Length: 285
Image 1 (tube, one colour):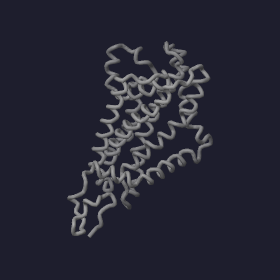
Image 2 (tube, rainbow, N blue to C red):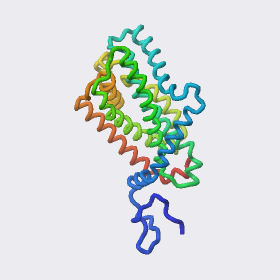
Image 3 (cartoon, rainbow, N blue to C red):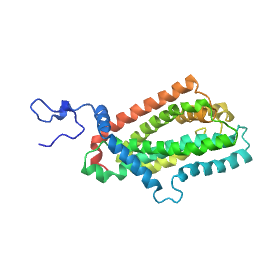
Image 4 (cartoon, rainbow, N blue to C red):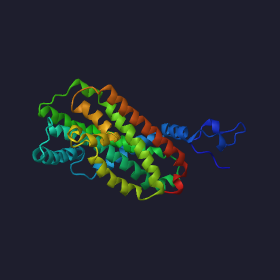
């Protein structure tokens, strides 16, 4: 008789010592418990991802900081000099939005890719499938923390001192991470069954970027457009992140409640969808 997978709990084994699949915990709980047991694997995956990204790069870790800076310079030249947005320290405004957006975009794409590209490993050994999405988020957090270094330097250089509200930065980062993980899990589930999901999502990200107040203040668009943008969850998450690192203020209670609610609901929904199908992934990737 086949042994139960490592993810099963002692409740899955009947009093006679035989494995009883009917007594396994719900997939939602089982996947979470398995992830906790394999936390060392998640740490190793994050370390592998970080090393792989910078191993053959001439600039190394500096590229994580230079990339958003170069994008900021281009956008600042176009939108500040040509369109003349009346925004205080527009370069910092753009950079703060790009840091939040790049984290979300890169981690959700990586969550899908890591799961699909690891199909051979999933088919040979048991491991919690959510480890790939969680490690993608962890890798993104490392990159985000590195990218915050030049932001702080630029903020001080242009006369924007680091305020005490900066200490609240873990709150918007956790909200971004929870939302990105929920989206990444849901997309990974779809990508296992449909190969077109990843390229279609990458195209969608371009449109999503321009529908999010990253490079323009939301107050400058017509009220009708503002009403549409407020249906975009990233509007609230980017705004929460920007309120701390750009405005230097504690988030408003209503903004904080909206961001936390969006993050939590998305995370739980994504985890539920993913965990229900995780047992079947080995047959499809």
